[in-house]
Image 1 (cartoon, rainbow, N blue to C red):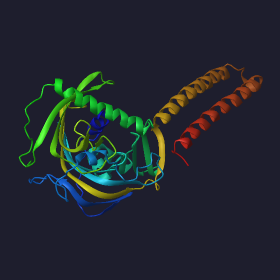
Image 2 (image 1 turned 180 degrees about the vertical axis):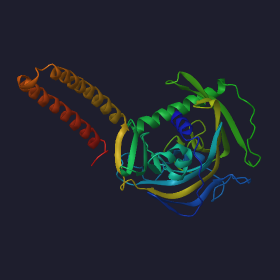
Image 3 (image 1 turned 30 degrees about the vertical axis):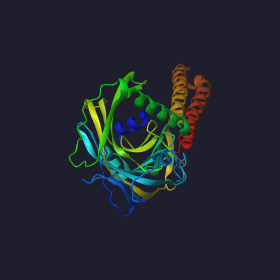
Image 4 (image 1 turned 90 degrees about the vertical axis):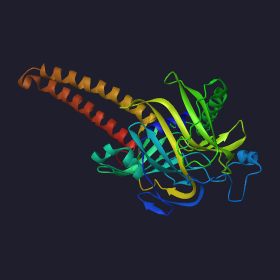
Length: 365
C-alpha cells in the first residue's frame, strides 16, 4: 500500500486521455477491449453475467495473465487499463495507464509523462513511455539527442515477492487501524456517484519519514469479478483485495491526507477512478539502449569511481608539483620525463575507468 501511495505522489502531475481505439505510439501499441466499470452516473452493481454469487472464489482466484519480466530486453504486456483523476493541490489531471493483473506492473504512456514532467521540454530527451516493474524499479524510455533511443533504469532491483509481501502487511496494518481511527463523515465527492459506497479511514506507518500516513478509501459495496494476484491493482484507485471481507472490491476514491509535496507544502492527494477497462497493450524495450547508471548498482559504482578518480587526480596534481621542482634545462630532463610518464599513465587509467563505467551502464556501446 505504501508503494501505491509513493507512486501516487510521483505521478500526481500526470494527465492524459486515451480512448478505446488502438494506439500505435513510439515503443508501444495499446487498445481497450471492454469496460469493466465506468463513472457514468448509473449503478454498476452487476457483472456482464449478472450479480456475483461467490465473491470469495473471485477473491481467491489468481490472474491467468502472464507476469512481466523484471529485465529490460523483452516486451512487457498488460491486460487492464485504468483511467483516473488525481489532484494534489496545484497539480491535477487525468491519467490513463496500463496494469498487469498478475504482477501489478504498470505502463505509463509518453503523453502522460510529458504532461507530468513539463520541464523535459527543455531537455534533449523525448519521453516515449515509462514502466514500473513488479520489483519496484522504473525504466523510462525515449529518444535522447546524444544516445539515440535509450532507456534509463531507476531503482534498487528488489525482490517482487518481498515487495508484495510488504504491501500485504501494509494493507493489513491499514485495515487493522480502522477501528481505532476517527472516522470522518462519508461525503461522496461527485454527484455522479450512483453506487452505494463505504468509506474507511486508517493509517500506515512510514518508517523512512517517521510518521503515520492517514488514508481514506471509498469502496463500491458490491464485489469485483476481476481476478488479480496482487493486493492492490492500480495507483491509489483500482482493484483492492479486501483480506477481511475475502472479496475483491473496487477502490474508486482515495484521500492521502496532508502529504508533503515539494512546492505546495502539505496537501491532500485525492484520486478518483473514472474507468476500469480490459486492454491489450505491449510496450517493447528492445529498440532502446538500456542505461543502468540510475540503479542502486549504478549509483554505488559511480561513488566508487568518483573516489578512485579523486585519489588518482590528487596524485596527478602532486606529480605535477614535483615536476615543477625538477632542475631547469637538460639537468632536469630525466626527472621531468619520469614524472610525465607517470602522469600520463594515471590520466589514462582514469579515462579507462570512466569508459568502463559508461560501457557497463549502457552510456556507450
